[in-house]
Image (cartoon, rainbow, N blue to C red; front, side, top):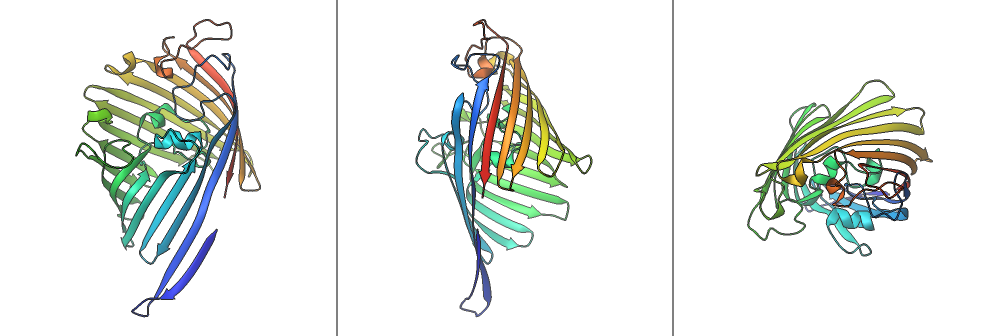
Length: 333
């Protein structure tokens, strides 16, 4: 929904005012193929961790712009929203994003408040991802930041973002007096991202991340994500490929192939290979149906990378892999 208004200010110059409202609602069904649904094992990634029928999240994004300035308020509810904002409350409205911005010029914008992260290939809202489940790379990094960032359009192809923020996933204020720093250099849809905090008090430390993709044909797209993280000698690294093929105007099929590993003291150097095959069928532009098969294989059967849970198979024996079928429905407006 969009409403555009014009009014005269004190200098009698017309100022355009624009209000928009958008959002999404999603739900899913999930069952494990290689383990009993009540075994307690889950993939070691964020969101969509319940078997049976489950709610993902609902979100409403309201934005208002008047001239060169504006504000955005993004409210979420449901388990996915609670996980993204580190809240135990999955019923009441939760602030996912809330920020104000100032378009200083056509090429420079300042933003202050809470905004979703610039790191990684995937995002919180499932409607903007091809795969319904999320990757290990996305789940291990920050979801959002609170701070100040400046975006510069250097040319038609080049962009630059610089940011100073509270430490990793601090939802409101910095109680320690520490801050984090971020930068993003973009060129024609390819992005090199840098992040740094002290690593203290559960911080992320240093991370370098590449996100991009290429249209290999009119119907075939290849997305790419790679990252390396270090926090005082330990952390994670990995890479993921996202080949996606549009077979018609309404249906596409895509694969996420990911390798993810810890290094140093983190989770005893465990690693995982994840293969996720997803179909995406769009009904009347707004409803998206996503059937998905996922198989994650560990380097051992300890299960530390699966949230510390021991993975078992359908015979109750220790296993080094977990597979599942998921059917998701996402409505956008």
